[in-house]
Figure 1 (cartoon, rainbow, N blue to C red):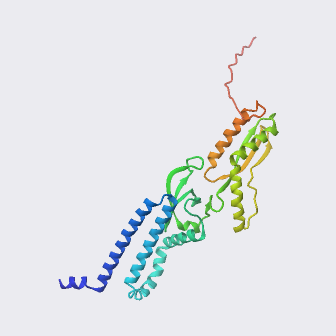
Figure 2: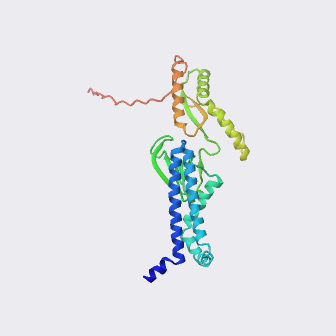
Figure 3: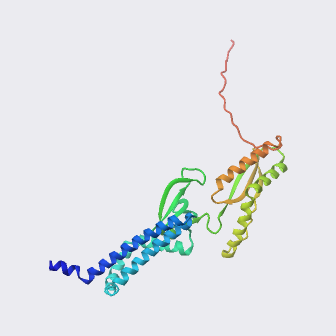
Length: 298
């Protein structure tokens, strides 16, 4: 009984109780703040960033509480931590690298939530950046086009130091894309080009204007030439048809839908030319060899 009383009233025990109480209060406060953010914040991006900030501040406050309560004991831990530091660093090298990766992602501008990236061989949209792992909503794989597959992929932040990081939407949220339009020989080439130019400008002209402004900002931060973002149409004559290639810029999330709109509109316009312009195709029809009736006369 006396030992229990000494244990309960020991200064270290009192400090441990203070730390536990402080951590519980911090945890409850964080939950209340997160619920308030969820109910008050309307935009998902603002809600996400405020909740991440509240979580970070709660961790920081917890560390400060522990440091303040055990401030006079921290000096004695220096020697122990120095001896154990090498072993801890070796055992937790991947964790330390992931934490360094988290720091680099936030302060070196590798990517941010909402960006479309390819990281560790996985392409998708960044939906969360944790201290150790980045969560990506996968795009592609068995699904054609830039559409979600439905899989959530968690990648260690240390990958930013090991492999290239492809960012589809960082400083320049546009991509160059192309479609190939085969036109029959004998079609009106000038009319075909006019139709393609008009349709392309109607559908993606606004992207070109927006991309021009973004590209100007790129040239201020990077040593890069002033590339043309206007739609471009080139022609190659091959053995089968006239092959027009339409090159244009498009929003990184609307590549597949824009291709569909371009082809739909082009085919409608070609149908209205009374066969002056017609799309070409190669059709191969295989038939069985007919039965031969061979008669030999003596």
